[in-house]
Length: 154
Image (cartoon, rainbow, N blue to C red; front, side, top):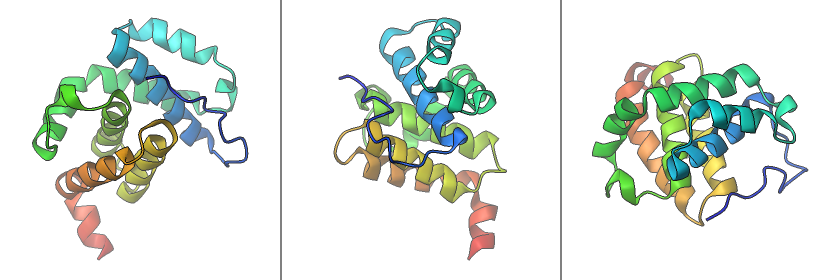
């Protein structure tokens, strides 16, 4: 499985933060597949075409924070999925990790935005229905990690 180019849809309006998530997804994909060193992945991604349009600080937080917290994030996700973590596609796995990380550590980002961003990443890079799976899992996770925010929105 190879990642689609992030330039597959040049007309799509992407914010610097969305671009940071796209690059973080690519870095996590590389880490999940090859177990390359995070520093090597970071350096490679930062030299990629278009990185200068990304929010480099958010990319750094997502890539390194997700890799650092991977065991904790997987522990949050595991009870909510219908298969083992190892059976997830690398794209779904990476999108779920990014979404879980943002839900857990970035309460300034509304939970609906976190879920939507993870769904969009999965639509762009993943399989046909992977985005539905990611949406369902992160919706359940938001219910536990962001219960107060969800209740306040009703």
